[in-house]
Amino acid sequence: MQNREKSDYDSVISSYFGDEQVTALINLKVETKEADIIAEAIAQNDSVDDVYLVTGDVDIVAVVKFDSYQKLKRFLMETVSSIPGIKESKTSMVVTTFKKNGELKFEKGEVETSD
Image (tube, rainbow, N blue to C red; front, top):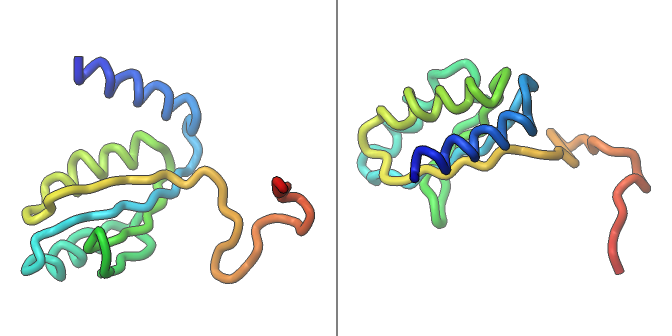
């Protein structure tokens, strides 16, 4: 059943993102003594824009951009999962960007607010 669920999920995500570029945030819980080594290993990939060692519920946050969802999935399955010391990873894909590098990505008045 697990494989079927993943297959259904991949189908939905692939149909949503298609072959478009995807940006994602990868949140990692890691063995504390391995944090620097893991961050450096993640940072080696050209599709990784930023890697942060952070405080809170996770230890490392990476911002990545891939040409397609399938390439992101391959990176997670082949690269991230093979790094020793990672206890848990959660990936969130960006759906809409409202502000980046201090620059608004929408025209004022375009965003509706509810009262």
